[in-house]
Amino acid sequence: MPTRPSLPTPKQIREAHEVVAELYPGARIKQVGPEGVIFEYPAAGRAEAEVSKWQGRPFSAEGT
Image 1 (cartoon, rainbow, N blue to C red):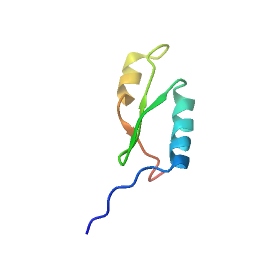
Image 2 (cartoon, one colour):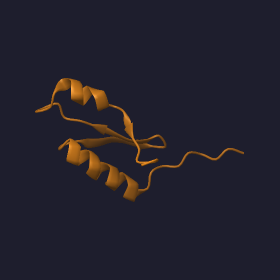
Image 3 (cartoon, helix red, strand yellow):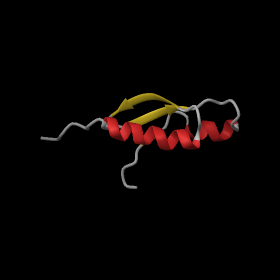
Image 4 (cartoon, rainbow, N blue to C red):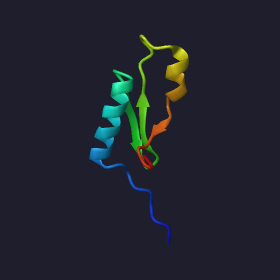
């Protein structure tokens, strides 16, 4: 029987947010799920192309 995907732990969520916030100050967690943590990035002060590159994409520290 296949196992259900697990959610990131609170520690993993905090660590992911710390890393993303260093790269993009003001980044906010949009969603947390089995696929990882998804962030929202403020466009103010950033090149639109750079922001849109990561907008809505999950972040996972697995494999690093």
